[in-house]
Length: 201
Image (cartoon, rainbow, N blue to C red):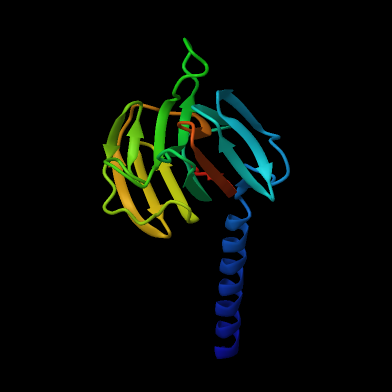
């Protein structure tokens, strides 16, 4: 009887582990590391792929994924570098190009990437306004860092290098694209290992 009970417990553990592995398999890549397939640029920024990294330079502009999402988790690696001017970027979600100016700032949420001033990396921005406060600045120009974003209903959370830095509730934007920002000339934004998975409702 004891052997049978032990066998059942072991089976349950194995099934649980298998289920966990299946959940991890639901991550979907946003960037193939080779070209800009699945992305659409707008604005003045120039986008390219260099050594498996998505790179943006040259001025204000945004590059949007074809993928759209409402409730999701996203993770990726980012690096912003000054090249004569202060570096400023961001990763957008639930975002759409403005109807009256496709090259303008997206209408949606922005996970800030900027290591100076107020509203630094880890803050939640809405168009023109820093909204959800990050608890601390954990990033530096010229250094890679990990961003993880979770948006479920009105509840939004950011992790920088696996540390929770921002939690905020907001209902203004429901669904839209992911996008990366090139904010100004004289800076470079780089991104790689970009993945997302939709959350069940």
